[in-house]
Length: 303
Image (cartoon, rainbow, N blue to C red):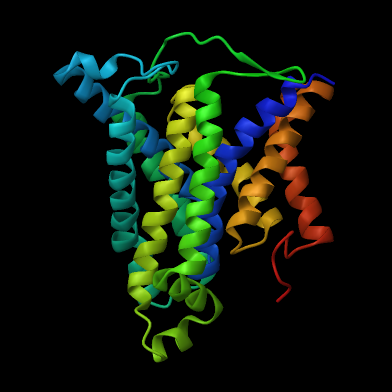
C-alpha cells in the first residue's frame, strides 16, 4: 500500500469532517436533513475568492505568498469575511424558507424537500454569477515535504489539517463549556421544554445556522486552496458529509470529525485498490452499513 494514500485520506477527511459538523448540528437541533448544506461550502469558497480578488486589486502586496505557503494575506482576511457572509446567507435562507416552514409546523419531509429546492437554487445562482469554469486562489506550485514513513505533504496541506483540529476543539469547547453551548444541547434534547425553562430557542437556531455555515465555509476554502473551486464542489461532498455525520453519531462534534477522517481514508484506499471511478460509491456503502449495523453511529445514543 502506498503510504501517501493515508495523507490524502486525512486531508480529504478533514474537509469532510468540518462540513459534517454543520450537518450533525442542524439535524440534532432542527430535526431535518439539510441537503442545502453542501451549497454553503461552495458559496463560502466563492465568497473568499471574490473578497481575496478585491483585496489583491486594491493592494498587490496582499497577494505575496506568506512564508512557505502559496497564498498571501488576502486569503486569511477574505476567509474571515467569507465566514461572516456565509453565516449571513444561512440566516437569510432560514428567514425566507425554513423559518416560515417551522412557523407553519411543516413536517420533516416538507423541510427536506425544501432543502432540495434551496440547494438547486443556490447552486444555479452561484453558477450564473461565477460561471462553471474552475477557479483558484493561487496557481503557485508547492513541493511536498517529507514527513517520514513515506508520507509527504505541502505546507498548505499541513496548515489545513492543523486548522481543522483547532476548529474541532474550539467547537467542542463551545458546546461543553459555554452557556450557548449548553442551550444548544438542551434544545437538541427537547425543544419545547427548553423554551418553557427560558432558553431562547430562536437564538439557538440562529447560532446553529451561523456555526454550521461558518464551518462549511472553512471547508470550502480548504477545498479551494488544495484542489480547485467549482459550483458543484459542495454537491460532490454532500454524500460524504451525511455519511460522516451518521457514522459519527448525530450531535457529536468529535464523532463527526473522526467519521470524516474515516470516510476520507476509505475513499483514498478505494482509489488505490479498486479504482478512482468507485470513489463516490465508498461514502454510500459506509452510509448503508452504518444504518444497518449501528444506526446511532460511533458516538450517538440509541433513541
